Image 1: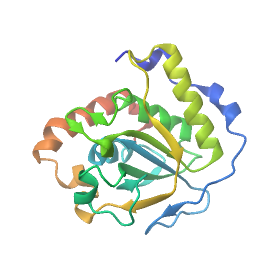
Image 2: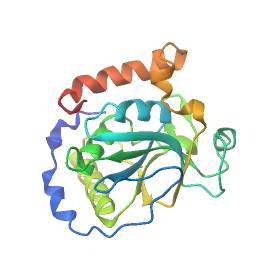
Image 3: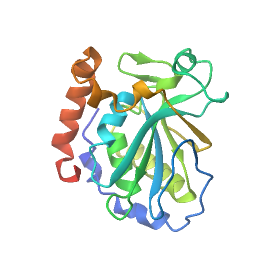
Image 4: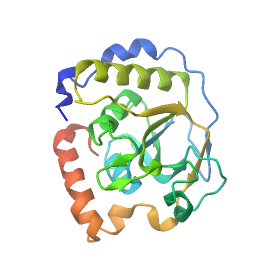
Length: 211
């Protein structure tokens, strides 16, 4: 993977796409969204990793691990892991757009996983680990699609981006033991070997955006 700096990682040209703010239903179970706050839903591999990264960002209020994009109601982790429910492991992110924009969240999203590997992140393989953006508004859709196209066109990645960009439908929070996983289990093997190095690298790159 090449450095995304070829796009200057600002992409303020995308602002022109953000005029249409018609919203899609936000069916986020067990979540209340404060006035003035917005929601983003990303899949980028194991939700333990994604949660740990986005929790560190200034302007992000809440990050909840869960499941979206599938065909059955209230799936369990065991069911999702079979790959037969159609769900992706995702994080539901509540953020303050006056502090951090959706464009900035996209920047973090695409810099912190490999969006060119279909249904796979590292050793985690299956449709539940697919790269996905579940958009909550027409504005989010346009921003995500244009950002993806610019990245593909820039040669930032050696292979085409396979990130799914699809309308948000419903989010099912994962079991309690999945929430705040890295914070609660820093010495667990996967956390030490996979998540910590990823978080450390992220903090070096995005230091000015951290809490």
